[in-house]
Image (cartoon, rainbow, N blue to C red; front, top):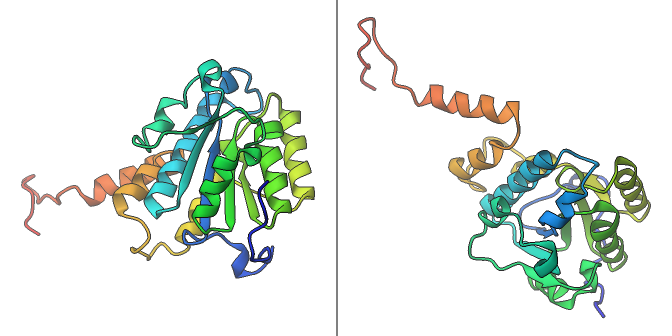
Length: 231
């Protein structure tokens, strides 16, 4: 059985409660066709876009990311857009419904030395809630990305989030995670502009506007004759 990490949980308030790339580890659970087939709490394409955006952000910020599936021979392989973010990583295929009962996954998390555990998966009420509650009880600071997760109904998702909050788990959305990892837009040491734009492309209108802004900034200025002016 897994044991608690030696550090005690960090505060739930104050600056230390916010996420940093250096302290985070991300586990993405069961984003597979079978799970999507009965996803009714969110629009499936939205969850797909959100989890891929989250994965791209984690990759860009250097946050260790663990991919896991459950009985993939029946439930299907990890969705391709997510696998494409980590093309060389083979997801850990489990039989345990509760990811935190799979020692391979737990060992992979502990090997990172990180204590802020970020989870997202399908379905919220089962494959996310179970490991979140157990890991929180073992001393990890657990954050669940609610808009990169989903359940079989809006009620199932909502009840799962409420139950996890009662256990000390922190609900958060994927763009909020990215904002906490960045912390200051003037920073250039945490993520390349290319990786940042790749993740922001999944933010809907904000992403479109950001990409447009970059297009305008990179468009040569022309003079009255329409000739590009020299820099």
